[in-house]
Image (cartoon, rainbow, N blue to C red):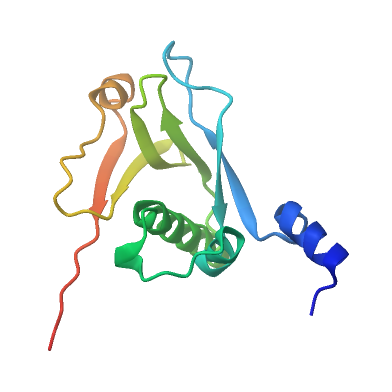
Length: 149
């Protein structure tokens, strides 16, 4: 059980006990890339839900895309750490709001991932990214739910 002071410290400083991970923006000096941004991913969506005080069913949540992205990135980071695979991790965004959710750079190879919850999404990998980094591999991961009765 936490005292009020302990909870305040926990709530305002989750990085002090490694509940989250910051990921910096990816940039190789292309003029229209954001260079000093960062995203925060929690190691566990339950911690994220507790901080937001939202434990609603996933279909009722307006942030289900963000939950999906957080889950995939946090599990990927855990996998890399558990298997001692060393890779630089980033996201990519332009001032025009073009975005790649997650980028891994390992052994000189850039792999870009875009995560989508909505299977009807018309989301694609931004052409600006493909043009700037033609040597990269790009992946679009869309959640597909199969119900078996």
